[in-house]
Image (cartoon, rainbow, N blue to C red):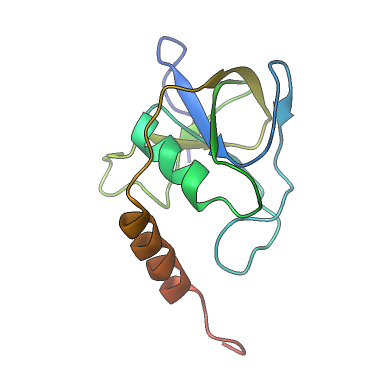
Length: 132
């Protein structure tokens, strides 16, 4: 998939539970939050604060969800898992290069506990059955 056009004019976010500081790098190679939890070959980012909130709320681990503003250190591309017929409604991207944390975004609102539970239940339903 080709790299996206220049998004440097947009604010880009990454949702997680990790406690990071400006200058820290978010790199590929960590276990995915979803599915079989294999090591991710990409890091994910979005220009949508709502999509970043989902990332923060659905991330595995302890602690509060966090959203960071980030800048890519290399090319980014539309996330093919969330892109349909050329449209990218969640404004979600991925990169094989690290993302540099520029700041923490503290003025975001999460989704209702009921909606988060429903989404987590849906994700569990997407996981392959053992032995398949």
